[in-house]
Amino acid sequence: MLLAAGEIFFARKDRAMAKKMFAGLIADKHDGYDARLWLGKIAVDEGDLAEAKTQLALAKKFDPDSADPYVLLAKALLKSDEDAAARELETAAELEVMDGSIPKTLVEIYARKRRWADVVRAARLSQFIDPYDVAVHTELARALYALGKPADARAEIALGLACAPTDAERAALTRLRATPGAGSKAAAPLRPSPR
Image (cartoon, rainbow, N blue to C red; front, side, top):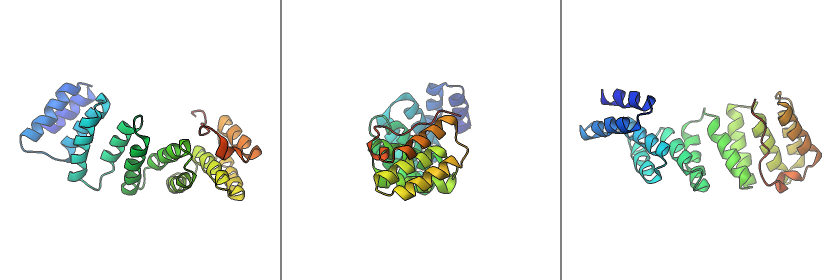
């Protein structure tokens, strides 16, 4: 009952009451994954990193096979510690093999950091789930150029162009194909416009 009430209060954006319901659940000796995950989510939403780490660590102990606590903690860490966020997402990607957003986020993080071998690894993971993601093809091509594999990069560009890219994505891929060395020199990942 308290769990359902907490979820309802959270949906209504009454985090104080939701927190009270989840804490009540724990106080009534019904501590578990759901209560800790929700308290962690509230802490992430409130920007309380220390509390988020505490609650999500407990959620991980209750259900070590769930990717959700890792994804939530990564979300909290993205602005302050991108490397720690990437570590959390790496674990989440191992646990949740059908969520393409996890390896795609890793591709974006590693591309910003110019960790090209990691871009290739994460992009391949992402492509198992969503082989038509033009942004992933673009970042993979950039990484392959940077790693000295121009033939593979050109093949990746061709695959990206075959995936029905938007005009902005097509322009980015065409630009990358025209300037093959740009992959390792660009300051930031090529960002397609939203569809």
